[in-house]
Amino acid sequence: MRTVISHFYNEEYLLPWWLKHHASLFDHGILINRGSTDRSVEICRQLVPHWEVRDSKVPTFDAEQVDIEVMEIEEECMGWKMALNTTEFLCFPDKNKFFSSLDEMGSSMYSIRTIMLVDDPNYGYDEPDPAKPLVEQRHHGFILPDTGRFIHKYSRGNYAPGRHFSSHPFIDYPFNDNPYPAIVIKFFYSPWTEETRLRKLQIGPTLSEGSIYRSMGLQHLVTREELERRYNSYVNQATDLSRHPVYQRLWR
Image 1 (cartoon, one colour):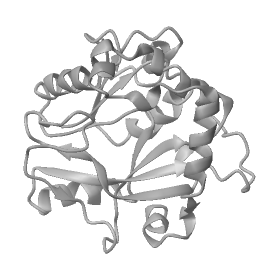
Image 2 (tube, rainbow, N blue to C red; image 1 turned 90 degrees about the vertical axis):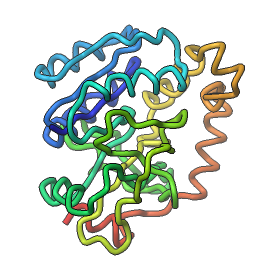
Image 3 (cartoon, rainbow, N blue to C red; image 1 turned 135 degrees about the vertical axis):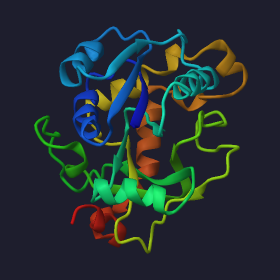
Image 4 (cartoon, rainbow, N blue to C red; image 1 turned 180 degrees about the horizontal axis):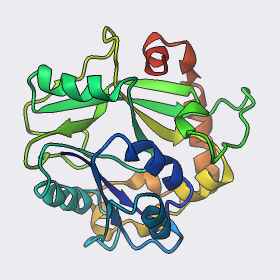
């Protein structure tokens, strides 16, 4: 069994792309609704009626408590499991080769490298087409050198808050020299539309007092002006990833 787990809150903009993308990659999905007030739940039930939609036990945004909830759900799942945010899309050129390689390399946990997408304002991107895969419509950003998302078959991921580190032994999934790479494409400041701006601005007010006290998730406490400044700073780091050899191998 291959299971994807994801928390969501008011994600009606990205969810249709995310669900359509992952529905064919995993045997099962468990979607955790943290009090959405938009059409997110309806979209989940419409596009993946065979997946589970659960209400979160965590009423506010608290990274530590959210990750505990994810790990409790992981304990119910057999086989390979992966926890992703709605901004994160697992991509590879060949599904069978990817999952076969997880077994062949012999580890029980892998870190999949992350690409951060940031729209280049000078490229002339159109508004994204809801009928086309989002991963095919944007290709500017930067590659994080040592940060990824985990896929594993332990009973639980034993994550540090944020799920970028685990106390379990793990290996980095081969990246540069792999003819069949796997990458998590994160829509970080992309598509840079009004919907994306509003999505980012809605998170801060839902942060728990505990998160603020522990200085966790403070990047979400942002004004519209600060959001634009951050976007412009990340634009300076972004390049056209369609020219990167690894990125090119994803779409062959």
